[in-house]
Length: 484
Image 1: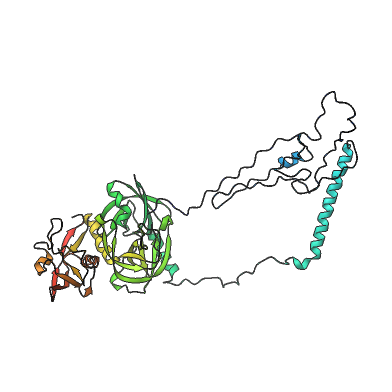
Image 2: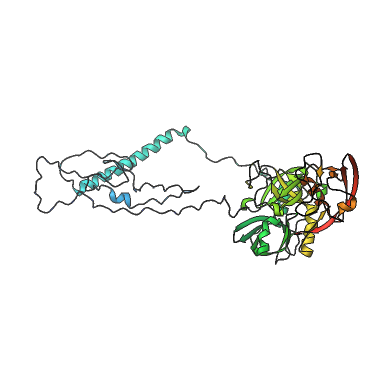
């Protein structure tokens, strides 16, 4: 899960104009009182700095702020800094304070004019020089445009880009297209946030009933059982607090409810009709990105998935898909091409050595909709859910064919529960279970999820080997409530 959006764009820094620099007095520095009328012969006579010859108005070059994240803002150009310095000379003789511009050069690179004569120019002469500079600049501009006009072939005659022909840009989105299915499903998918003292968990959910019932994963809202606040955000952006109706870690399913009516529920389809290769859409809020739709196919069926912590592990007879599923997708629907929910996205596979969910690698798993329907109905009616058992303990160290019933008691519990379904069917400690209803099992998790895919009271046929003898045994599954 995630407690914030890692893709959130960085907040742009506000544009802050640089502070205006102090303006030194125009002209040369004032002479000290009592200075001689004529300077010594060996001293160089001061010369007035002529204004730089460049187009008006003068602008301080924009200073670029340091980059901040993905966006960088620039301050507005300052009109006070450069204009005030034009023609001014500092007391140390380095020229205008223009951020390191060499002496005798303006920020635009215009060289200082040569000295015309000794002494001070009159105001009229300075005005005339400025006027001539402006006229020269205007003439240069006219000449430049004339040169460009003479090279018309090098300039684009028309910058307008081609436009699509009328009536040809309409995209066909027939009924059953991905866009049509997404448009129908998105209003019924919500984002869920759970705030607990240890952090914030986010996930997804689907509207189950118009009266405010919402289906999600147990691991999304597990902290709600301890009083954590649950907030639901709907597709139109409005939020509602939610309360926990019931949850089961055995199937990793939970139902929450908001005080709202008239909601549009999604339909739970028949997951027994799903086949490998069916097109599917995964809908939810991966990494906090609400209303996200990804597409793929059903990659496999009956994948034994053990999700969650060992103490409260969920055993799922899962639908595998390559539709992108990421943290935050948990609890969202897996939808088929008819717009029906055929699974509840719950888990993703990670590479060897990875202990936490880092992202999609094309191996996502969903709880079949038939299991979700049965469990959700129990949670709404009673607040708890049940699951089936056969009443045996399995040996995880067994390496042979099938799954072996433990030969010895474990932690004080007998290998075969007295008067349980297996005991009544004649299964003994050390027997090996080879298949369930013709479906081969080779590890303990496969047997557990095959049994939990059934309902309490259902009969199952087990292929059992005792020593060298094999036989089929009919077992009626017993019910056990979550938490027992």
